[in-house]
Image (cartoon, rainbow, N blue to C red; front, side, top):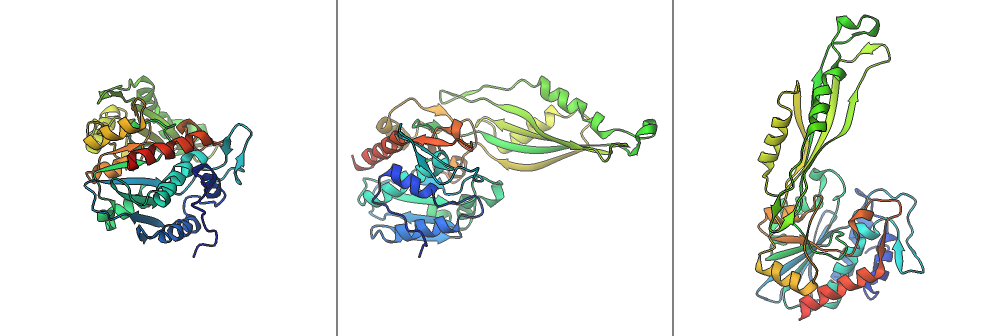
Length: 359
């Protein structure tokens, strides 16, 4: 049993506060996973499974359509912003309020209070989303138990400020290494400076013009940027190696292979000695024309927006399940020390999902 039981009779805003006060930094999600599992196993209308610190619960009512509601239970490192705090304006402050314990609270409330939805439901709570892709709990579940994630449509309750966000960008991180020859800096002509050799890479980045493609009526913005540079041996040594770390955020009309090839082309004439793929997660097309997506958008209202960033809608897309992002948090507040969420938007998001699933 979980040491800190979750109270699913609380409204979604109060439940968000309880979740925030149960820390779950990436890699340390077990106490919260235990609490989620215990709370869901107490609901007789759900079948519950667990793999690692990933919990999946399902209704089995024989409905014509199955919808997946998914969210990660981990947060970025706490920055002096736990426990949670509710201010006089109805704003809840704390680590994970926005990204994405408010969305997880909405999932839990729907699981607890909609025992006979008009569509069969699968609830997925997974770990390690905020860290390297190979650690991602949804990835692990999709590889070992893909049948747990099957459905006709998925809603990822990532922060979207209460707006439907279609698809997601792909993210590719590449290490560009230049090599030289060490020498004493007093006799620099006897060596070859690897940091200097990286200048064409930086010039190519400065000159790069990103695309803004329109897909399903949504404009996606690409970006190719240096996010790190390392080199140097000592204050009197000509360096023999320099590494520029580059991140490419690309639109969902590119495949993973096309994204890699594009980055190779950009730096083809820049004297790169080694091109190493450090991390890569593919993009996802919006899929807004799917009938389930159309019905969802009609139910929750608003104008769909593109997703600037990568989310696990990409994994659902890879499983053949069209997916959107829809959560109460403002994505611009994610990961900040002053992370916060409006409680009114948590309650509104819960009600809209409830209306959609009970109409």
